[in-house]
Image (tube, rainbow, N blue to C red; front, side, top):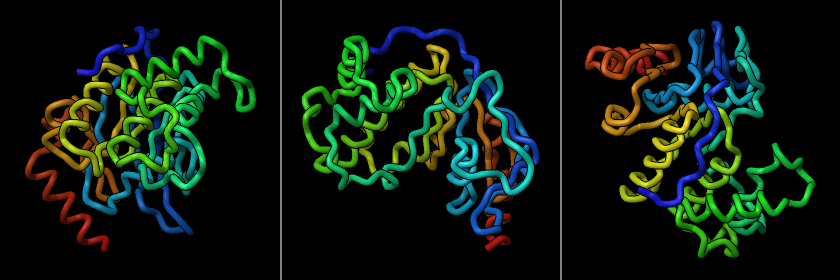
Length: 247
């Protein structure tokens, strides 16, 4: 378990509601007719075959993609209450930025994009770097980091935002088991402190161990509810079959 967790936060507020929402690219829906609600403070995994629309749904909930049909609504808050950790491959690592500056960017919702950080925000930046064990790398260029180090830094930036709900797209891809366990401990701690957690994952054993709720996608919603009821052999077979039919 990582030491130095951040102070407890207030109770959860934000939830995400989808009503027959479809998202896609260039007029073609990648995920269709999703109806349901991610509850405040819940811990939910999104799983399914490759190409099932998991990342597309995540981008739709964050407002990066507009619904082709239906609607998505962030209740009791705006999207500023959501923090998003995209896939590491979406980050331009050639941009000349230090680890410290990338993490400090997580404070922009409180400070504004052009304001100087206060002493309190500098202290918080140092604290989250310590939490992810990257204090010694604060002055390094982001482009020099390994995959596991970069993911720790992105987690630190996410923690810096102190959002009601965090959305993570394949947060453990290309990182070793030890790093996965440490970052998973961070997510569990965030959940304990009241944050909602939504994560796109491929490791079903990890989902069964840590995530009480699961959404199984294969273009359409195959099942959504308690993980033990969703990740059944029958539902997983249906997801594979549905995905093959759509190819």
